[in-house]
Image: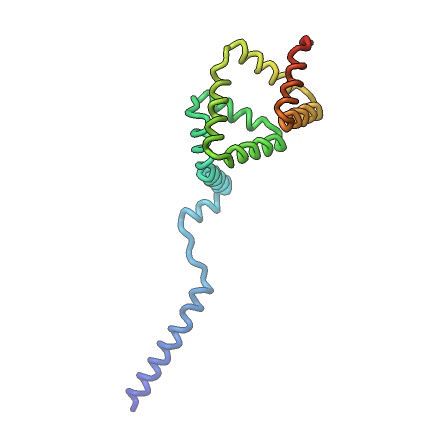
Amino acid sequence: MMKRRAAAAFALALLGFAFAAPAAAEDRAAPKAPRERWLERHPLVRERIERRQERRRLWESSRDDRAALRRDLGELGPDERRALRERIVALPPPERRALRERIDRYRSLDPAQQQELRERLGALRNLDPRERDRIRDHAARFRALPPAERERLRAAWRRLREMPPEQRDAILDKLAKTPAE
């Protein structure tokens, strides 16, 4: 009889311990890894690591964009990539958003239309150096304009592109015949 009572008491104690142990484990915080404790004492290092991780996440999330850019523009040399990146970063946020919208519109085109645009870009790349310099000069003058004037010109070009081809060609022919100022 005594043995039964002792066994029952022991079983009851084990049962209580089994139910109490998870609650006690939740009360105690799990010990932190040494690296985590070290990072708590060095917040600047932790911040640098987090920034690097964020840059890597951004880089990985833009992988599809980079692959599409490579497909659309062909392989770019390091200087061309850097120049492209610098020009994009230099754009004000509204212009950058507009560029993103244009890229999205391009990607929404069917492959044949995309190919046609790539061929037109290829033709621009293979221009005569004098013609290329003339276009760069026009672009520099455009960038030097006040933002309101640039927006006015963009709107005019948008309206011109939306016109019927005959009317648009007539206007462009008139502009080509006027002497340059």
